Amino acid sequence: MDAWFGDFRSLGRLRKSDSLTGALERETSMDQTISIQDLVARIETLVATDGSNKAALRELLGEFHPADIAEVMDELSDQAALAVFNLLPRQVASEVLDETDLEIARFIFEELPNERLADLLEELPMDDAARLLAELPDATAQDLIQLMQPEEAADVRDLLAYPEETAGRLMTSHFVRLRSTWTVGKTSDYLRHLDPETETITYLYAVDEADRLVGVVPMRAMLTARPEQTIAEIMNPRVVSVRVDTDQEELAEVVAKYDFFAIPVVDAEGRLVGIVTVDDVVDILEEEATEDIQRLGGSEPLDQPYFTVPVPYIARKRIGWLLLLFVAETFTGSVLRFFENELAQVVALSFFIPLLIGTGGNAGSQTVSTIIRALAVGEIEWRDALRVLGREFSTGLLVGVLLGVFGFGRALLWGTGIPLALVVGFTLPAIVTWANTVGSLVPLLAEKVGLDPTVISAPLITTVVDATGLAIYFLVAKAVLGL
Figure 1 (cartoon, rainbow, N blue to C red):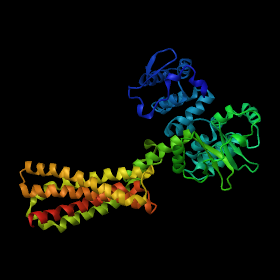
Figure 2: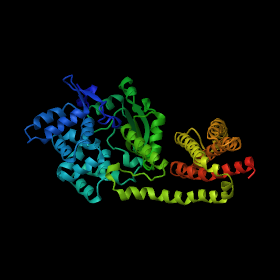
Figure 3: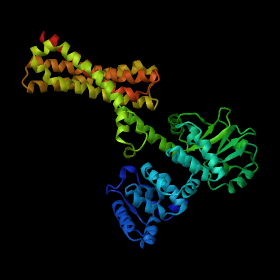
Figure 4: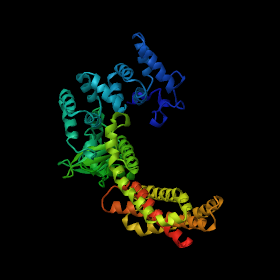
């Protein structure tokens, strides 16, 4: 991997947010600046020829990191991407297969012979190979595993045996494991003959005779220790680890909390069985953030790239909450019917309904987003509920009063008269304060009873505030206008 960074360190890795917008440029080894659009266009031109330009295309691809090649392949047609992939050396091709979008990866798995695919999977870290195989039909995955070398096949089977989204599924068994009784000198000799597939040597993990994790040795400690010292003397016995059944989101939180590059994984008896590296944690954080954002909008996560899922699948993920909210929104109609006499007496009341319930919904959504994020990063807990309610009540009142002043002025400009303008001015603080209070309480209650706050909070708040906001509006109107 390091060989790719020799003269091309300035290339860096393309971010998904930069993809082919024209703003991103990369420096080649010939000190030429090439935009990503130009690179894609050049590759498409070379692919479209009769094959005489394969050497030129291979040379062009050789200037870029595998992650950059994967980014470009994602923008090509399936056939063009396959043509590019077939020109790559074995090691580079395996890394590109790991980096490319799932849609392209699946196409490659469909088009290439199983023997070559198994060969490429063997080049990858086994946790990455297991992740790719998990996305394939079971029969296809089993066929590929059968073609892999026995040791690699056994590693992949072991990983796939763990439940999805757990530390066991994400870990790798290729890491440095030391005996606590070894000397630093013996350990140094051992490290010189490490398997090239070893994931990381940033941390060295010490075990006892029963393979139980007993300590961790940062590489800095190894480099500064005397050869005659034992691992037990220089290791840190206070090791932070996770169990094989630890949820991936909890794992990511632990790694982020302690700023680890890797974290050891142990079984129920405390035996060291693998490590999870920071690159996998980054993927976890992106995946969990995507799920939370989709749930925040009242939809179940797609779990797959958008263009790879059929429309009926998307509809099925969305229809459940929409039906529930559809039924709940009928309460808004019930409120309108309950106050239909007041509305008939002062028709102008209807002019401000969208403004008031919209403002309440927006205020509630702001509060929900803030509280959910604070819960996610551990800033607040259920025991802080009263403090949170007090702060959000005060915030809602302050914001509501300011909005009430603007609402009063806006109503006057519409020529509705002072009494109705006062109704609007008094209603806004009440609705916003109520929305903030409910918006802070619902996520806390969901967390308390073991539900995901992102799933129920935002859609529920909007529905509740719509109905209750109308009730507040008409009650204020009755009091001010004497209806």
